Length: 209
Image (cartoon, rainbow, N blue to C red; front, side, top):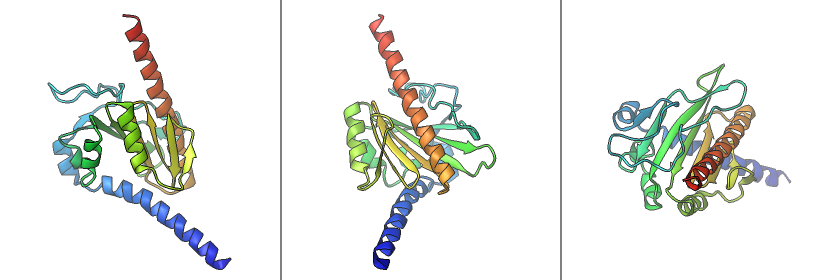
C-alpha cells in the first residue's frame, strides 16, 4: 500500500511538472527579444498584424474579460505570426507551423491582489477546425481529466487545454494553488463561449448578405 501511494504521488508530481515546464518554456525568450519581434496590441483593438498581413480567423478583440471576481483582463496583448512564433515558444514553433498555424495571440490575466499571479493564455489560430483538432490530439496528455470546455478539452495540473472551432487554446496558471486552477477553468469557459458566440455572429452576418 505504501509503495502504491508513493507511485501515485510521484505520478502527480510528474504531471504537475509537465504543465509548469510548458509554462516555463514559453516564458524562456528574453523580454528584449520578444519586444523586438512581437506585435503588441491593446486588448480593445483588432488583432490584425502589420500593414499587409493577412487577417487571421480569430475573432476580435483577442480576449474577453475574465468574468471572475479578483481577476482582470490582459493589459497587453501580443500577436505572433508564422515568421516570429519562435520568439515566444522557441523549440516548439515548428510543430504548430507544420499543422497549419496562421497566428498565435498571447495574453496574461492577472490577480487584482497580486500581479505575479497570472493565467497565461495562448490562442492558436489554426486556420481550420481540422488543424485545431490535429494539434489538440497531438498534444493531449494521457490520463488527463476531460473538461466540458469548447468542442473538446481537458484539465491537468490546474491548466486547461481545449479547442473551439479553428482555435486551439492553452490556459496556464502561473501558480499551483487550487484557487488559480479554478480561475483558469473559469477563464477557459469564458473564452470558449466567447469564441463560439463570435463564430455564430459571423455566420449570421454571412447568411444575411
